[in-house]
Length: 379
Image 1 (cartoon, rainbow, N blue to C red):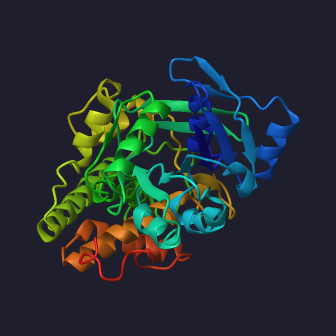
Image 2 (image 1 turned 90 degrees about the horizontal axis):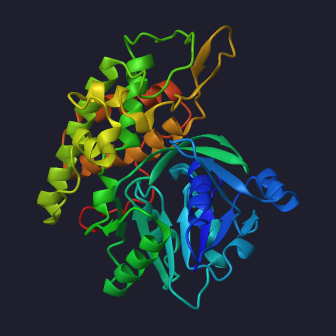
């Protein structure tokens, strides 16, 4: 089986090495980073991963290239790992290079931000493509040295994936078999892709923490940081409390969708429960959202996106970070738009989203353009 990973960032690098530990896989990596492809071509091509227990896993991708025609030739599974705001351009780029003579599974890890709607819109004319997404990353990853190494964080005990509503039973069975071959953790297929879209994650987590750090009345409002911070082990109590309010808003959207569309979204659990089930014994104190975030070993060491202050001493939030361009401009924007169409009040999500639009000033407000115009009538 040939699998093509689109993106050589943290998730792409980690998956490439892990896949090479599995039998019978040809692993191709499509990357826009010419230096990564050149390093693979000119050196031994071996990438490695440091595991949480200090072991080193090594694997050599079979192909690394910026050329989609080579990377996608005869592929069976395509895994998009780029951030959500980069995915429209990528899908347009790869569309004409996908095989036409067999079923090809095109999915995203993670599959949030409405990837099902995006892929269906761009790949509409390719009838052999099966559209899918994974609920979350199988492992966290950090400290990437591109084309060389990355550190693995906590692993999920169980993985969940979903297909676009248009896919049938044969595609479901085929996808499940392929994913269970790719991953060590068992993979369960969800009933509806909205179970992924509404799963609480970065679209509510990162904006809440940013607001608590640099928003109105926050400790670092209009003030540089004097040291690096971690997203979660340094999360302020106000950030955890705002996150719980955003999560409650997300649950309100979930219940409204269930009522409007008559579907069961019980797998969309409150964030605290979701994290406890995902990371289990890796969390030292699960009593509150605050204690859970700060004591989750799977999250330890994940740095907030801070860069040197261009106007003086200290550090400031990186406005180019995917926390803005993916989590807010794509993910949170989509949640706010879904709520508006369902006529559901989401005060915490709206507060953080509108603040981020004003603070950043560099992206356009509104839902991603690929949300069907007549949703929820067209789910």
